[in-house]
Length: 223
Image (cartoon, rainbow, N blue to C red; front, top):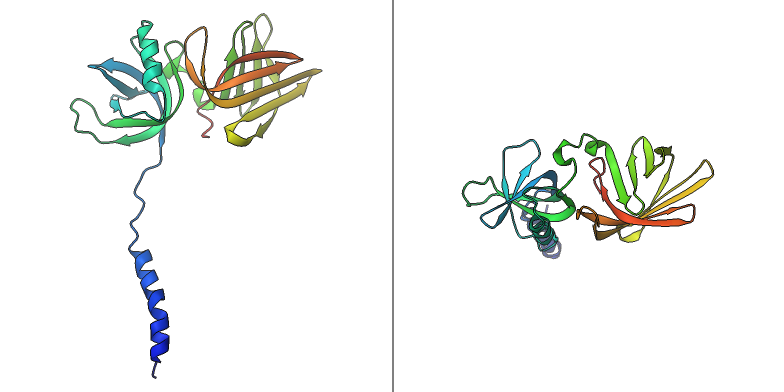
């Protein structure tokens, strides 16, 4: 059977395209990893040790975050060790006495006070928000929302969540004649009492009263 020269010429671009596709390199990049652990200073470097591990990593370039600045401020206040929850990329390094480099792309929380690695509720927490004057906090898990206010018993409430543009969230609840709205926005937020830095600002509207604070996504949520 003869194949016309015209048909062969027409098929050449198709064969070339298939060859180009087959020669495309495989994507070998690893997805960012979320880790929690302890930060310390050593010879001018920030060292990170994940919770319940002996490995340590030097913090690489953090231009996408404010981790270096936030850690420096907390260390300047007298802290010798910080707790950090962050997402980023692990890579090898030639630097001695460390197991690699961790380059953060998102910092959820950095603090000098609190339970840190010993927080048994972290992996069950979807998000947590809190503020002061007056003190209040909201903890959200798969079991529901719990509102804590100074001088009052904790309230477990059903809630609805709405995801909004630009990473914002709204949680609302109407129960026992009470109207609650929690508005969260991705914005660096500093706790005025502890100096802890969290990655979201919070505004709680409760029966007409407006309370402000900070918030972070817990270990049960991977946004």
